[in-house]
Image (cartoon, rainbow, N blue to C red; front, side, top):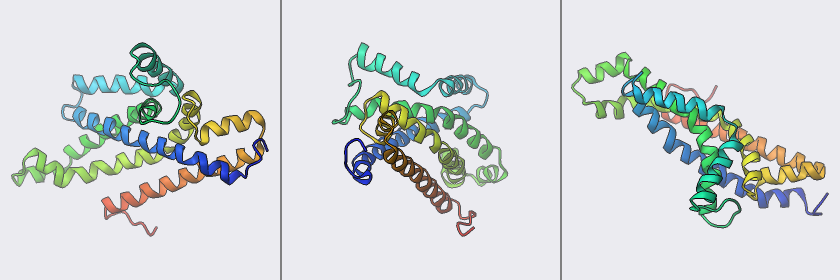
Length: 227
């Protein structure tokens, strides 16, 4: 109703930017959260475990726009390492993707830690070590798959957070994606764009959930994908 273009033409132009940002945030969160969680599980209730608990609680309770503003102030304004907003270069991805990833990884640290502790205290893991396998080999053969399942399940649930966060982060960093366009459509009362964007973002959530379910079935043969 504002630009005169078809809804699909507008969304097709914007959706690629949103999807690339969401995938970048997921990749960064996977590199941050699970490794820290596995390290914390090596000594449960140790100083590093307690430190990750405090950090996770604080970061998860802070609104995502506060994290974004803090990163802009530190990395863009004070240190001047990265651009504060906009789109066009790989550097423009870092701040918005990192803002989303911090919120995701804040809880995945604890999920990964809890999953690893359960694996380490299981009978099959003890039996693997009794067979003479060292700690690293036992983890790779018998622990990795069992740790991966709850981590994937968590990210599946947190895709809601990702979809919601994209709207806020894109507006904060002037990212030309569906979330940013949705805010402008709401302000302009462009009902067809609001409906189309909401439909696409809901569809993205469903598709990503389906991908996570398929990956879980491939990792764990006990999961029956036919049900």
